Image (cartoon, rainbow, N blue to C red):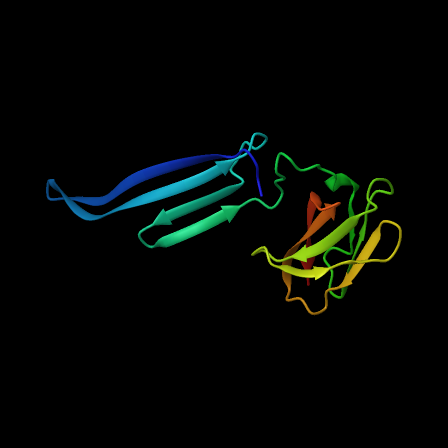
Length: 153
């Protein structure tokens, strides 16, 4: 979720033509529509959707944090990464008493919740997950304070 975003819509019309025997032969024309969302702190779109007559594509950044989020990414330790059986997370010692950490798929589905194993340490068995990229959503007192990613082998 990103607050205070700017959506930019771009529409481009293309005509694919061939010059033959002194005249243009028009082979195909199509329209491409792009939607890009920017936050106040991003110089590149945090999400982009491109639509053509053949279909659409979606591109999003996995390293972007919404402007209302508190960034503590440098204070999170995720190990091992990549992982095959279990994942462990260590957080800063102060201010993280009411923390929950969830494993989120690329589609945004919550898959697992990490169990607290120490004061500010969490772990989860990920052996049942398919190989790929996953996110860790760190919430403190119900507010998302960080998002990190890991790779499941």
